Length: 153
Image (cartoon, rainbow, N blue to C red; front, side, top):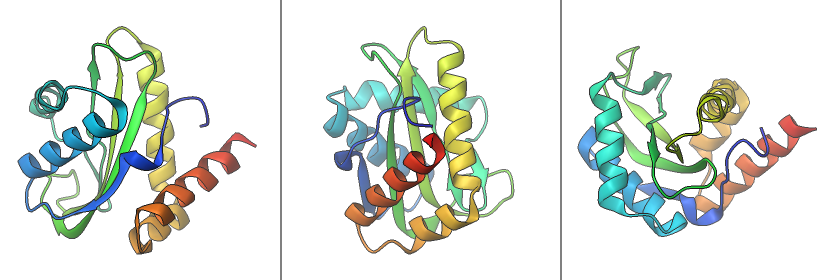
């Protein structure tokens, strides 16, 4: 997975968000702060993607994703919600982990490969449980780093 998307500590946060619009707004702000992007543009692109169908992955996870101008590589951000919230997930369960992915406008298969890598990561029961139980952002980032290093080996 290493190399498919960039991740950094500033792109991980634990937040309160009661519904999908608030989740997407907080995720957009997190992307903007961590990666120097326009929060309004990111939110607009994420909302446009959601209109095609919910990115609620199931098992308490959502993976909102979009393509935005100005990026050179796919970048990721992770929100852990203090209380699970409805995200219109495929399994009908509320989400508490929101793993966002933004890719360059014309990156084609790279976006799909990065999305698949995130999907594999959150399907790993040990990783999912560890992220859900992580006490803070630093622990969450450490878990992600360890999981991606392990997958790269």
